[in-house]
Length: 372
Image 1 (spheres, one colour):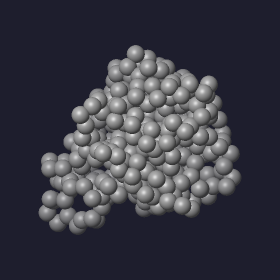
Image 2 (tube, one colour):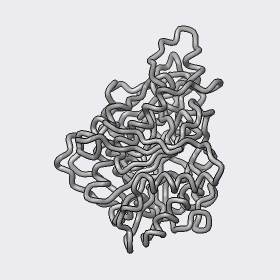
Image 3 (spheres, one colour):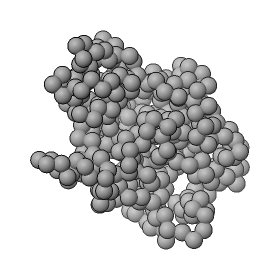
Image 4 (cartoon, one colour):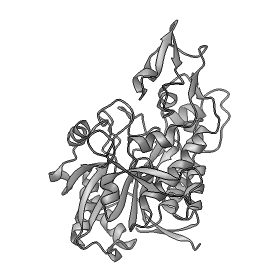
C-alpha cells in the first residue's frame, strides 16, 4: 500500500481558526468528494456535562458549512453511552449537547443520536473478513448516512491510550450493544490493600457492578461489562484488569468496528489536537492537558491520521502540573518513554492502528504535508 497523505497545520493564525481548518480540508482534497444530495454524518463527541475539553461547536459549523457548499445534507451524530451520565439516552444526550453549545444555530445543521432513544436502534453490519468480530452493531442513523466525516478531539484515554479518528468512529458509532461487544473482554479487580474507600469507581461504573465490603470496593464479575472506566477513575492504582491483554483486545475490536462503520462508504477525517486531557471526554471533568496544543490534521485515511497525530504527540514535551508530568516526576517511576503509557500505564494503543491496518482501512505509512 502506498503512503497516505496527512495534512497538518498548527494553531498560529491571523484569521479565524475555522477558516484555517476549511483551508486545510480543501488542501487535503475535501472538495473532490461527491456530496450533492447526500446525507453526510459528521461524527463527533458532544462532551459529557461538566467536561470542558471537548471541541467547540464552531469547528462543527465550519465542517457542516463545507458540506453544504458541496450540496450535501449534513447532520451531527454520536451514539449513547453504556455508563451513567448525561448521554445514556437520546433525550438526555440532546439536552447535554445543547447545554454544551451544540444546536442548529451554532452548528448550522441538525443533531441526530445515532442509535436512537434508548441506544437500541442499531444495524448488525456483517464483517466475516475480520479477525475479532463477525458482525458489528452500529447506530442506524450512521448506517443510513451516505458519507461519514469524523471530527475528533485528539486526547488521551485511560484504556486505549488516545482517542482519535478510529475511536471516534469505532466506539462512537457503535450502539450500546456494540460498545458492550467491544468492551466485553476481561473484568477488572480491586486490590483491597490500595483501595481508599473513596467511591469514585462506583460513581463511574456503567453497570452498578461495584459494591463495598468492609470499606473496600468489590467488582462483581457477573455484572461487570468490562468497560474499564473504574480503572481510569481510581487515583490510587487499586484497580487493574486481571486479563493483561484486555485493552489490547478492546483496541483491536475498535479498529475492526471502525472498518465496519466505514466499509463501502466515502469518508473523510479531521482531528483537532488541543486541550489534550489525559482521559476521554466522556468524563464529567477534564484534568489539565498532558501535552501542549499540537494543531489540526486532515486525511482520507483514518489510520494514517491517527498515526501522524500519535507520532507528533510522542515528540511533545509533557505539560507541567499534569498527570503525565506528575508520573514522570514521581520517585521510582520507570518511564516507558511513551507519553500515553506514562500518563495511563494500563493502556494499549498501537494494536488499534495495527488491526485497523489489517482490515485494509488504511495504512500507518504516511507522508505529513504541512500547511503554514
